Length: 201
Image (cartoon, rainbow, N blue to C red; front, side, top):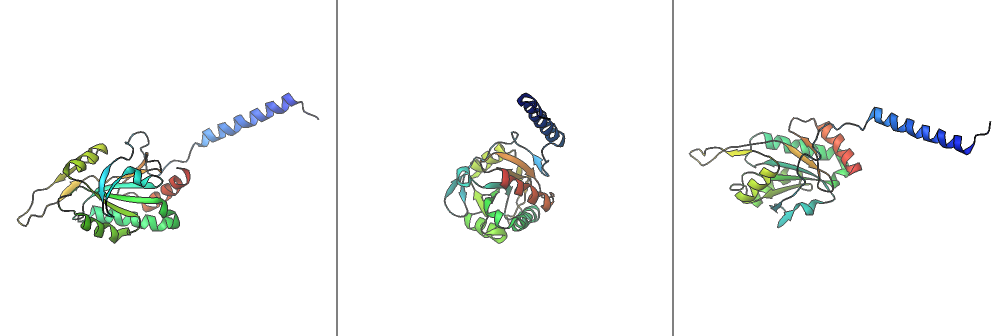
């Protein structure tokens, strides 16, 4: 049986509709981490870098960027989280070159640039960057990403703890916020979502 051109067009249209409906039924694969696209502000800052000089978000365009707030004297959550992220990058292999982890100190009084560099280099000297601002700049970037932090009362030796949020913000290559994880997020979830983001952003 020979089909007319109009019949062929109808069949092609029906096939396209079926493909669209099938895709709609399955939907896009869900992220493991929390999807914060259009909820969290794009990456924006101007801070001193542990690698030297002042950097802005523009310095990290073209990279998938993870943003984490903490301090070098943190006894548990910060080192645990950064060690996890370092392990995630190792699992990414060569693809990790497309990722940067930015560690912003919420304790700029004690966290000097040399101290920050030593701290982040202990986890990953190639992909981690320590960032520091004065009290005003620190408060500004914390407010932008709704990060709370409180300096505790110093003891007799002048030591104090800093309570702070433990979110890991993930931005795509254009600096737009995409995902949010925490120190309890499984490493495998970070790895899967970062691979996908590196492929698609």
